[in-house]
Length: 235
Length: 301
Image (tube, rainbow over all chains, first blue to last red; front, side, top):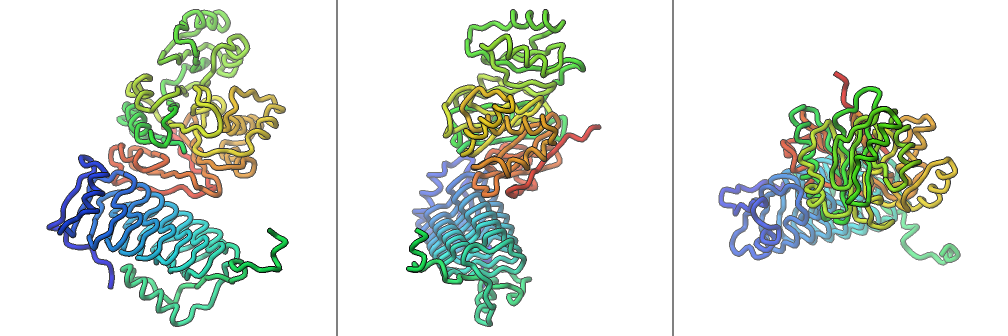
């Protein structure tokens, strides 16, 4: 099911021009019965809607700074703008949607949940991802999925240099060009169940105009991440 | 960590508020660099045949009148046009490099912050809000300007170690990052006859750019040379007489965002510095790619 923007007629509106970040985040941590929140005037503030742990919906009207929706659990956070470094970093579950573009390290170290970036994501997207799924409608920068362990990174555009360097078992799907592959990352055959995995993620992300069979799959050659006695001399 | 801001005015209305906006942008970057602040503003060109120097004296009791008289004796005419917090701007009836060389030779107690026809550089230890007040930033009108808030990592917190650094006539550099080969490069540049005032890494990058351009490189070529010759992290913003240029190192872990409207082009370490500008929410905005030189120039009317 696609992530729909919720009706927000009964939302609690928080204006970051007049409310401190701490008050906002405390309110989101103790939401009581209020499931719908709307944040205005974020103006690039850091750590907006961090550490949420409830099934609430948060709409952010504008651009946010670093670590927006970091450590997210259960909540749905939608940024109607761009996001700075580390959006949805270390996410556990829930959904984070960036309508614009995201800066570096989007979805870093995430353990679960879905991050959708409708624009581009910059360098190091999905770095050290551990189970999060990331769908990028545009392109990602260099060193994306560095040491990626688990989860899927779906890139509808291009990927920069050193994609998947030192990758473990994350699934990488790129529709466009890849600048270069990182150490131990190789192209693999896109089988039917892989295309089905991409199709399901695109659907959840609400990306409807992209054909899942157009993607190429990349993953680990598994030559690097196990200790090999033959390499002992190199350490 | 450090904070960088730059503002290039496309409309004359905005030019009148250049300093006010630069100050507001710097204040947003305070927690990226609370120990020093500085700006370069491009305004009020010196008349043809003359040049403009920004000088600094550590002694707050220093009076600039006698220096001005000495410059007038040497070059025929000199005038104090501005004085702000230990900084003085003089217009001298001489080529900028001659006037600068004279100061360096005869007044080792003074620092030449900038030299050229349009540039003025002001910088000091302290927080950006204090800086904006002490240097009356809201007074400044001009075509463009850039600024820096410093969190020192490579050398001492001093006025001289603050940014911007002059990189030649009407040129300056601000830097977020740290260079690891600056000691070796400084020695190489000294061998080319370049003088240094500090142990600061950014001063070496500034000197490198100045040296490359002295040897005939364009600004763009000099910046591209950084990709080969500098080791370390950097987002650079370079001010020129007509505009500014941006370069990020290949790793690009130091942030940068660029935004543009019909009225201005702005660059900053983070969007929150740009958010203070009129129409920021609707601006076209992007993150500059690593290794790519981005440049804006005032188109001559």
